Length: 429
Figure 1: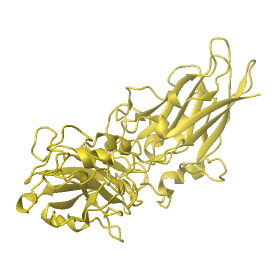
Figure 2 (figure 1 turned 90 degrees about the vertical axis):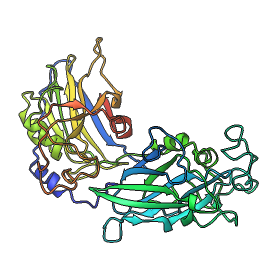
Figure 3 (figure 1 turned 180 degrees about the horizontal axis):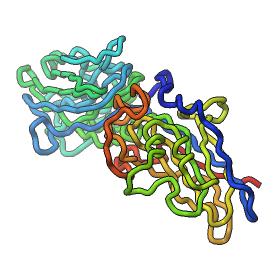
């Protein structure tokens, strides 16, 4: 997850030269507006996902003895891995790490790799009464349908304490590999065929987290988040969706370039190559060259966060830029701000009419008019982890050229402005 301690001096050094740009002189019917761009990205998890297809299989299903599940994910120093996969020959048991998860880096920021089975435990979700292992009529292989067993009277997530099962390292083996640039690969092997209790494993979930206990609280009732469905029935859909809703990249936003105009596509035209000014904004967060290149006189840049004194990026949950514009009926607003944890992505509101057909001024939340664009100027790396992205690059414009065209980012994980920012416009009397 992006942290403010990462130096952005390279990214925003150019903003020390920022010069405020004026707006057009007043005309009849002129209206003043205040525009606010706020960073609202506040995700709990940096990566999560469902694993449901055994290695080498063509479709989702259980992992029988000798099979394995695998999952590829991204993490930063300080992050940990937690997963949950059902011990199928039980009522509500699942394998997973301890409350802190599996540490993915050491104290010096070096990635971990190798056998991490020692971090794994067998947990009882505390949702269904336990029956003899491999024999219970309400266990997944034999039950009439999902969620058919009697409720556990203890109703607490706890470690399995049973003489019926061998040690965890006789049932599963978990291996961690590091692929570089923040990417890891975990493999969960079912080795229970060599034990006294052979059991399938069921599809499960994985999550990358920095705080402990991402899926449950020890000795507390299971959350209504889908863990029960994983532990009782091997169904990860609900828990996977719960995690996905809280997963994303908490990116800073860079200073905003804006213009009020009447001709269409003042900042850029989708489907064409980006200008040098747009490239500078999309890759390195500087609005200066783009604003300077505009033929409109009603233009400017918002570079100093509200409450700040110097140009800087804005962070969630309170960081915002604010600027004032003037316009007359027939005018449009376009603005752009860099999605900093990327190579060349930017949010933009483009060609937004500031008055309706009756001359009434626009007001309120306009976030829904924003789109996340790829400038097509630099080869994309995984958002939040690429070495040529602004927070990690050695200097401006250091990534490989893409020689593409401007287009909307198709990944719905990122191209949802309501998860990342809020843009409001308010007419001023």
